Length: 404
Length: 147
Image (spheres, each protein chain N blue to C red):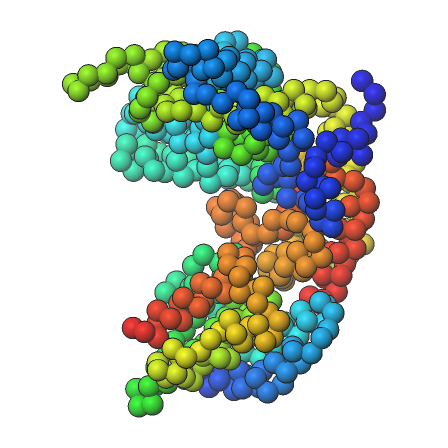
């Protein structure tokens, strides 16, 4: 493959033609969509729309084929062993809610422990909490070290308590730090735990090879991978997925229903009650095919270059402090202006048409542990340009001039 | 303590009405406008840490803001004390208070805040509902004054 050309990559995204004045650095919240993805969703509704797995007619069979093709695309993308291991959800949050409900009502017993890290997004905290109290399950949290990474010594000590589940994020959404998951998950497996990975931020950084990866479950959202909103994936090892109690009951997920009892369908239908997001799945598969045209390594190198350019420029602006260790980051940098609330900085960046996120980024416990009100997060994607980094640095200079 | 804060707030708001609001109406670049917003926020006293209690917190804002309310039993007038972690938000909230502080319940029903914000060219801030919590603060003011 040729060298990565960001200008060429950017041209696939019509958003930038519609909004030429904006610099979009909120890519950790959601990414933009290439024309191919938008066209694929449109084409489905215009040319192929029908419900899946149901109709007696050929149109439904065609829609089903498209939907199942999308599953096949995700399976090969993640190098999963079986198509039944790929469950379509509405996103990472839905996947975690299914996991928490399913595990709490099957494999977990009162007194069991679940281990997460301080860097988790609320989606990997709250679904567990919803059941912990009623099920008598204990949630343990790995603290941070001085580099704002999981404290691995403390992790080992918590693993010694034999948690039944270890659920960790691949990349911190608030700081961008890449967790040493290969090592952490292997240790968790060795301790006998079921391992879960929140890939919401990680998927755009490194796609796992799930046949090599020590994770029993892996979740991600399509919309952070240039795909549509409202579609995501819950991957799980077949034997474990089969034991998950379904969170949603309804059509399509059953084999027999009577008013006395129902029996469930085989995977993946068992965990996909109701009409799925057919167009979304097709859009996600299109996004994956789009992305596979590019060399992931070169994309990451380029994101790393943008991040380094940004970090170097920040050093010249007094009062700014990066919370992110740039060398450990998946293209995200969170910063703070000394003694100022992140909201003020974000308002002044918004005024200059720089789109960033400010606040606690759905990771309130993390910022509570740092004793900070939050941070301003800059998340780069491969369609961002060095000129945009320069303009962002100028805008930051202007904003800090006003606040000082 | 509360009485002093109320008096200082009322005093600050009066100064803002006289000096800063006319300035805001004049055309200026965005930098000047924001500097002014932050300056006027400084005219209101800071809420001491021990008074930043959960019951005064206006929930749902991206930055934390607090509102204390006092109704004079004789005159029936409503008085407020406010603070925010974010300086721009504090400035915007101070402007909001300019139009409600020291008014009776009957007078408050006649206040058209959106008209005042229009006149100050600040209407966009009123509609950015989630970011700055102006609408949440407004609801809180309505709740405490109608109780």
